[in-house]
Length: 251
Length: 371
Image 1 (cartoon, chains in turn yellow, cyan):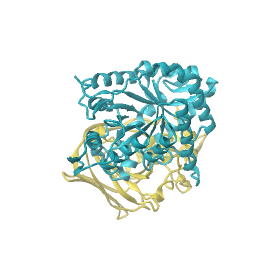
Image 2 (image 1 turned 90 degrees about the vertical axis):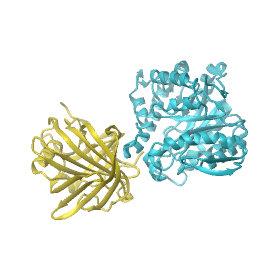
Image 3 (image 1 turned 180 degrees about the horizontal axis):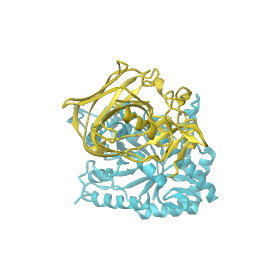
Image 4 (image 1 turned 60 degrees about the vertical axis):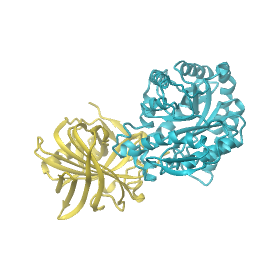
């Protein structure tokens, strides 16, 4: 059967966000700008970046996503995510290695409602007619610089966004346990582009990628869309085998 | 109705020094038995880099071995990936002609374009281009086979005039097919007068609609080959056992394993936004199959169970217009080889005779099938 992840979660489990209420409501994010960059990563990351409940993609893939929200119930924010492409049993998913947000209020919402492992730092997403550029600076260090080069229009329906799997803690019988929270937003597209993918700078340590550097650009897309952050429907026990790990969240 | 075998050559981990050898030789043994039992065809795919799912990267070699060890079964080379980074069309014309000679005129040629980023990226092929290069290939291959001397100035491929040798044993050339995975590709097949080589397992109603449209459209085709190949070939799983429950349970294990492996593939559309891949190709169809309408607790249309059930299922496929069914016999060796062979023998003894009198399948009609 397919390979499964070998990531030791113990260094991350204790600091994973605690989601006390799994019955979170939807969250409407209007007119968001979304950059997605897909790279193949070094084979050293084939299984080492994923928990045992997940299968790696072959080849192993890394997704950089940036979402710029001009306004929301907590004000404007920009979120940068680095995810590892994977399968939860048969379902395509992105395991969120780490996220950075430029708004403490938005980070707090994402952390406590959907379990995002998100910290606050500087995130910039700038679109021009020749590129869409993302930079993330933490503690005065550039930890990510990526871009879509030479955008050309496409249909939003041509873009595939993978649902997130966020490592978080939830309460079970009064005790916190680690679970992957599936976050599968809905998108209503207004415009979309694609272009060449480019990652010019990445600090693998800052994004929990160990030695697994991005090595081969695959694709880049940019979209303007309304996003509906979802109610939580599924959890995954990260330590269980793929076919035994999924839990449906009771309404 | 004609019956065939279909091979992906899936190889389970852990990969020991003999694992691939065993899987290949199990397949060869199955093909020899199928030939003895009167199966009509054996197909093998071309896939690259698809760990466990398919280790069939040189199907022409496997199929030549099949041809050398059998007498009657036809040899389905398909699909051949019609993308320059994978295959130069001259080489396709040469090797298929050679296979046709070596098999005494038993070759069938399936064409397609690959649907995974794993493969397209591995060859550094541009996903935007694959549909276009496929369309160019299917138009020049028949000319390469039939013209004494051939030269061409095209979009994805050009060559000065040369004599492409050898020529196929079948005249004017082997039947040509198109792999149909994405919705709408059956119409590409019809419009070009090519056979529809279905690689999905959708339910009866969906297939009936597609086949009806294929039959309607092919009447008005502009043939790319020397003759119209109006035939619908589909794919299914086969496990036949005297005990219905055993047959169903084993068959479900086989189909479930195959589908699980298929879902691991990194589809082109998942990695690369492109109009060229408006859907996921094989993958969504497989997923649909597992959630398709069911008969009892079995997904609709699967040829698994006891002979009576398998006959019933095949009659339904026949009724919706399918001409041929190719069977996947195993996936990741989840079914022991002896059980696979027993299933084949039982199918040959109990099921095939029920369809023997209907074997006057529509042969390829002569060129000019359009009005």
